[in-house]
Image 1 (tube, rainbow, N blue to C red):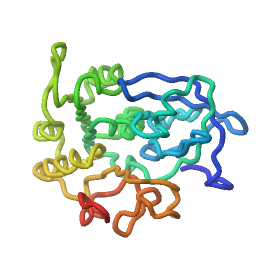
Image 2 (spheres, one colour; image 1 turned 180 degrees about the vertical axis):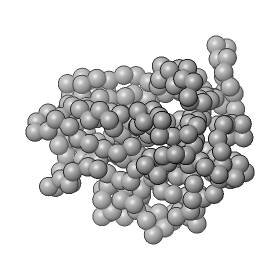
Image 3 (cartoon, one colour; image 1 turned 30 degrees about the vertical axis):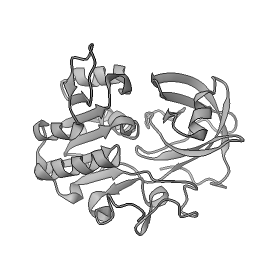
Length: 279
């Protein structure tokens, strides 16, 4: 999908064109190239390495629309040294970008099937390109469900898009929070519980899952209760990715490297190691 770059370890300068606050600790940046290129194609599910010059580099999933390649969109939570500095950057500041890297959501293989997407917290960001792509080719898929959970109403990402997607007649969107507040009138509870009532045919469904590992663990149990096999379930994982090319070994996961072989894995290929620490 992406072009082979001359030196994949060398970041290219990209300028921040827009920044939008999503939640108190999460923001979305839209980046445009500084020199030399007008587009950088990517596939839904891939990630870039974003480099804050003089501070460090972090892997961030691409959260924009793969059918619109004129900019790169990333949604970032400020939780570490690099992302906290990144959070303070302004429009027109320049970042280094390496990528895109990694595997992708199997959207071609899902054509003709029902698709259920289950996201927890920031896990909606890597799934958003898949949602864009599915909706752009909506007639190629059966029933489409998005089940999304966050800790509180203030932690919900992409509120306007959630509303638009939920208003569509051809998409089932269920949003829930672990803890509501006085203004919240929606669902309360963990997201895996909504799998039991989601509209899809287990025999002809592909499930795409991304979120905290504990959320994915219980999501897997509920999907399997509905009759999905491990071959029908795909997960996006992210543990300690550093080089993005499988050189450093920090993200080794059993016999795999999450940066090079993932981040998207079919569940049956990794279930032996999923949920185990230090594998």
